[in-house]
Image (cartoon, rainbow, N blue to C red; front, side, top):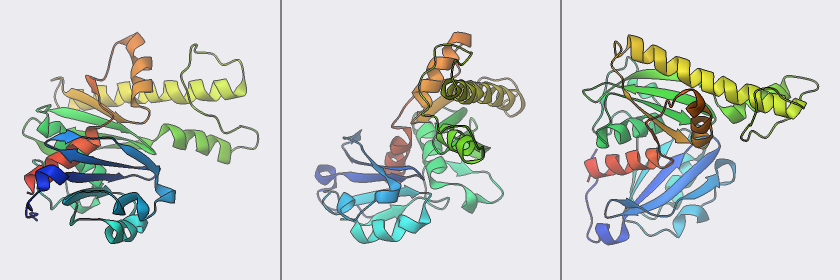
Length: 254
C-alpha cells in the first residue's frame, strides 16, 4: 500500500502517531528529522489533538482499536495504518502475522533502518515486549511480560493492604517501607527479566552470537541505569525508537 507523495510533503512533513494503551505519542517529521513529541494520555485523546497539525501524510501505529475512528476522522491528511501488510523493510517470519502489534512492527522497522541487526528490541510500556529480528531483517517473534506500571497496579488491585506504588529509582536492595519494598521488587524483577530473556534469546535464537539490544519506552532509561551495576544489557536506549520506525515505514511507502 503506497501513499502518493503530494507537492509540499517535504515542507509540511510526515505526521507520526504511536498509539499505545497508556499514552499516544505524536510528532511531525520533516526532512528525515523528528520534531517535538507530544505525549497524550490515550484515554483522553480528542480530535483537537490532531486536526490542527500541518502535514501531508500520516503513519499510524495503534494497539487501541477503540480510538482509531476518532483519529481517522481528525487527521488533516491521508493515513497509513501500520500492519504486517505495509512494507517497512522487515520481512515477517511469523505464523500469524496479523496478530503482531503495529508498535512492534515499527520497532522492528527502526532496528532494520538503523542497521542494527540481528537485534532484540525491548519496549517498556504497559507491557514489556521483546522483539527479535534476525541478521536478514526478518521479524522472528518475541516475548511479552507485564510492564512496570502494570505490575504495580496488579499488586495494589489484587491485595488488601499493599498501596499503589509510584515506581522511581531505587538506591538499595532492601526496602525500609512497604512502598519502597514494592518499588525494589518491581524494578529488580524488571532487571532480572531483561537479563534472563536477552541471555536466553541470544543463546538459543542467535546461537551465542551477540545481537544489538535496543531499548525504548517510558521506563527504559531507569532499567538501563539499574542494569549497569552488573554490566550493561542495552547497546542503545532510544525514547524515539518507535517513531523512528514509523518514519522508516512512511519513507518506504512514499
